[in-house]
Amino acid sequence: MRTFVEAATGLPGILFTAALVVAACFWLLVAVGAVTVDSFDADADLGAWSMGGVPVTVALSLLTACAWLVNVAVTVLLTVQATSGTVTGVLHLLAPAGSLLVAWRLTCLFVRPLHRLFPDNSGPPGDRRKDRRQTPR
Image 1 (cartoon, rainbow, N blue to C red):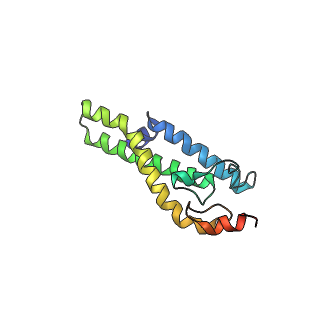
Image 2: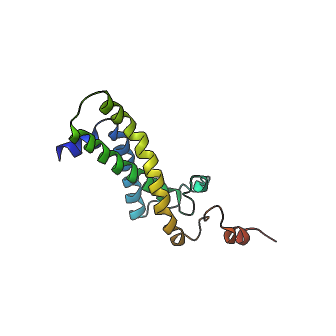
Image 3: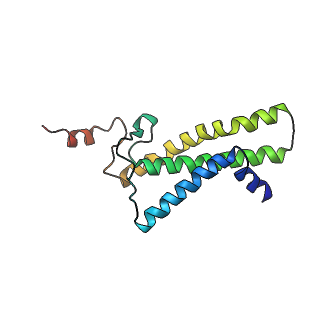
């Protein structure tokens, strides 16, 4: 348990932990009705990142949670291996970037089935049905 807490609160994991706390606070505000799920959707289009079709808050919350989980898991695994040296140090430094890349791919996979739960948001870039409904003739 100590290794897990150190991975979550040590550098660089604290960056993902702080982002996860912000996301959790946002969802608490949504739960009490102070804000709505689509509060930050005015200018954001995540279709270019293959995360379109859901509110930005949902996609970024999923990205944050996945990145935190992957980063903590990798950090714990590197710590448990208990090998010290240059290679382990470099792997500890590369873990956050790798975590973001893996989290991005996972988020793209998780967002796909959520499209139908949010019909008001634009679908994937190839979704022409929504474009036809919005285009005046």
